[in-house]
Length: 152
Image (cartoon, rainbow, N blue to C red; front, side, top):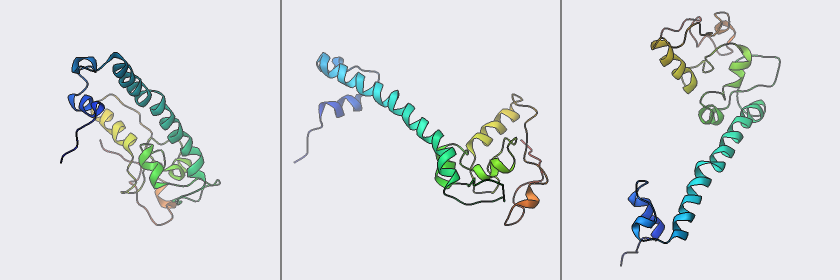
């Protein structure tokens, strides 16, 4: 008593190299499938990226924790930190705005920083601004970052 897969499930299983019409589907089904790919790959993805970007400047000024006593309400937010490739460590950014590294603790994963480090290793990024050596002394729970040195 197995269930038969729907035509769109069969189309998905065949992969992107075959079109809907190659599997015996109608042109209307092919157009519907193409429109679905367009919506998921274009406008919807764009809206998700916009919301993630806007969340950096809204969510991270409302919810989260603070590593540094800055003059604003910036906070580090774990969810935004992961969704926005490290941009959610907003309090760290406000404490040292010119630094390329926003994750100051071992568990604050900063994908952007890792990409910059890779570019440094390849010799494609030079003169990268690192966290200020004086900044680690002001970390509220104790020094957790290196003294401004980053070896690639």
